[in-house]
Image 1 (cartoon, helix red, strand yellow):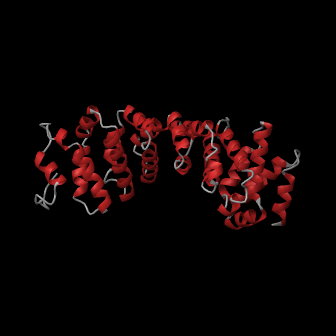
Image 2 (cartoon, one colour):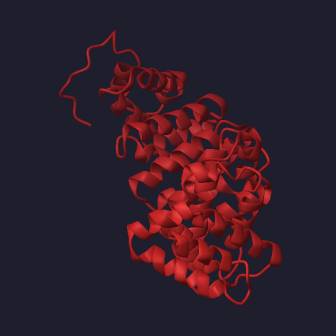
Image 3 (cartoon, helix red, strand yellow):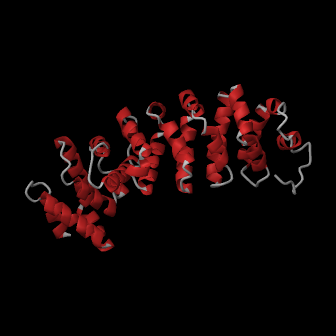
Length: 326
């Protein structure tokens, strides 16, 4: 541990900082024992403060090594909580990193957004309430360029950052204004891994709780279709978020186009199918609420199976065959 403390001190000297950073990175790569001692010596904090200093001096030298070491040893939540006074500067510094150019672009930005996730998930409400538009603009830009600028783990870290910031209405509005809804739908249309889908649906649910978010959701012609498609294909938690998104759209933004679109892309059929499963009672009630709210309109279309819709809406009045085939 003494050697790590010595390397931390060397970070403060211009002549020795690069050599110290490279050595710390090598130690972090080597084994778990080293990483444990590095945490105990305070290396995560030293790396974060080094990144802040780079931001202040507008200097990228050493950032790749610092972020690589930080990614390997991770930022213990207990240590992140000990940095409340520096949180604002750390967040601004990591956002600055996301806007810089590097030779190892993908890894550096993935490591930066991973560090940002660790800071945001332990940040106080005071910090989260002070996030600026540039913060969300940069996260959304990273997600927009995800196929060439960031790893899958980095994508999930970026999504976690947005989800953790969602409880505040001001943050949701800034996300919407930064184009998050369109980017999230595009990302989901790429059929990502299930973990990514759950994060995307969670964020979209929060954003659709405001009028501007719903408007952006409906502006993308694939929004209703992709949310519908994920029902019964990912997890019960994803079903919950998907149904809640459709409920918000159905309740507050149900234009004639929306009602027709829900029929056209199979939303009505999918919701009827969901009711046949052993899902949570509240989810069934929410699903029936959607179906009942527009059943009069859907029953007018010749393409709808009226008996199926009627049985789904009023299960106590009509016996549903357990062997019904869809």
